[in-house]
Length: 436
Image 1 (spheres, rainbow, N blue to C red):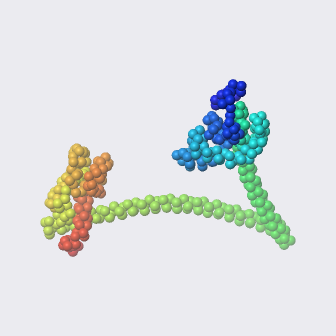
Image 2 (image 1 turned 45 degrees about the vertical axis):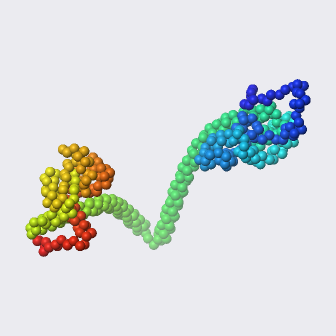
Image 3 (image 1 turned 30 degrees about the vertical axis):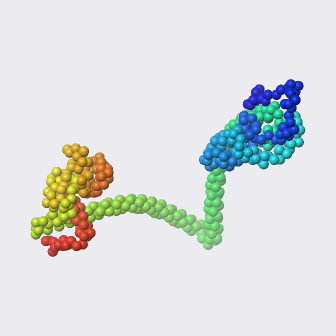
């Protein structure tokens, strides 16, 4: 290392020094004490902090004197903040200096035995050989007899050692990756061998079991041999063989039937689930249609005795301003006449087919309710309608279809709700021309 990363101190020849510039006793005592971290050259702080203090220790100290987050700051941010504290001096530098002195008190006492720079370098070289770098580095840098040449030498050797360690780490990483790959291959090979051993063990156990069974059968046959002739034995063996074959055929047949039955059961379960969902949808639709038919039938049948029966069926619309978006021309005309006869106002808008959509936004602020049949309005108009209604605070309600029955059922439901809210109003007649 040709030049140090810090400026060399300017010295003068001993003979040129004046008597007034001779060091005092207090200055000599100050020279004999150990250097503090803040008194070192600023170029040395990075190496001292990075080598002698761990990231965990810095993560505890640095946030006390900076605005860094102890848990979320990166290691580089913690290191930079610690170096800045050492350069700035003050309480942060004192805390770092105290941590270094407490951690490496043994090394400091060991290096106190050095009384000149050469002895200090000898102790430093011994520490390099043993690999105990961090304690020796702080003890050398803060030693009273550490000259700028000693610190430059220690810094240069530590700097080159960091390059060697980095190169060794990269080689170790490459070897580690290769060893991990080889280890994985060996693990897979061992697993395959273990699986094969288990399979062979199972085959051996099955073979031993079969051999034992055959031995028992042969022993039984040997016991019976004294009583049975050769022809009888052959007939018995043939009968047993046929019985075994028949059992195997029946087992195969029942196995195939069971598998087919399981597949049919799964298909039937899926079909049942789909039919149950369709039935639920159909029942819900049926209830809605029944409610619409009931409301329309009640309004139609009551009209035979009382001319104002239809108006009473939609009594809720009296005095209301209703905006009806979408629908069909024929049913819209009937709905408009029905609402006007009941004392209400129905404003029909086709959703943007022939009427401009801007008219719809202008008609909404003074409306009491907005209705739209979901089968006769496009999605764009429906989305725009909901946004405008929510902006102006106007209630809106979708109708199942554009039929008169859906509108009458909606109005009848709100009429019944309004009558339930005001019990003083006389209840409508429950007499029906068809059912009594």
